[in-house]
Length: 277
Image 1 (cartoon, rainbow, N blue to C red):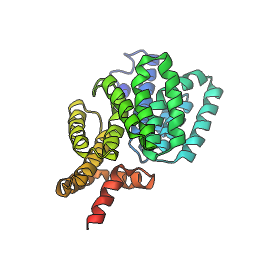
Image 2: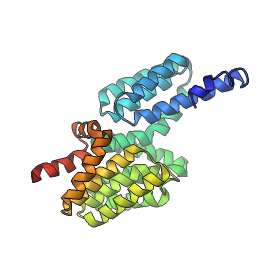
Image 3: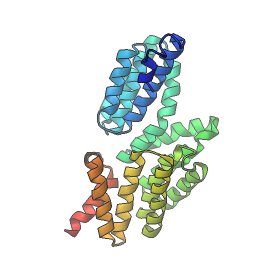
C-alpha cells in the first residue's frame, strides 16, 4: 500500500498533500508494527521514514525507541526518547508526540512485562491509569498491565482477577488489549500450578490468534507457554515437538533474545527439556 501511493496512476490524480500525508502515516504505523518484531526491522523503517519524510524526524526516533525497547536495550531506548523529544520541540510537534507516547504505553507495558522490569511496569500502570480515567477504552490495558505486574511479583490470585477482567473487556479480534493480557494470564495459570487449565486456555488462544490474524509475536509466546504447560503435565513429546516445529519456522533467534533479556517464556521450556536429557 505504501509503495502503491508512488505509482503513476495515483500521482497527479490524488491531491498531493493527501497522498504524502497518507503515505507518511502508513510508513509510521508500519514502523511501529515492525518495531515489535525484534531485530532491526523497526530501525530500517525509521531510517526510511526520516529519509523520505524529513519532517517526521520525531516520529522516526519514536520508532527507534520502541525497537530498542522490544530488543531489551533500555539504555538505547532512553537515548532515542531524548532525541525524539528534542526533535518534537524543534519542529513544533510536541503535542503530537505526547499523544503518540500515550498510544505507545501499551507497547511499553508489554516490553516491561517481557523483560521483568518491575519499575518500568509500575510506571506503565500509573501512565495507563491516567489514560483510563479519561478514556474508557484504555480500561482493558489497565487491567492487563496491573495483572502483568501482579504476576511478576508473585501475586498470582490478584493477577488472575485483573487479567480475567482485561480478557472479559477485550475479546480476541475486537480489542488489541487481548494480546497484552492473554500471555500473562497463561503464565499466571502455570505459576499457580493450574497446568491443565493453562493448556486448555493456551490452545484456545492459539486458535483465536489464527482465526483473527493476531500476529506471530503473540502466537510465539503462546506456543512457548503451551509447551511449558505440556512439559509440566508430562507430555514431553508434544511439548518438544511444538517448540522444535516453531523453532524451525524461524524463531530460534527470538528464543535466544528472550532468554538473553530475562524473558522466561521460551527459555524456561527449553531449560525444562535440558534437565530431561
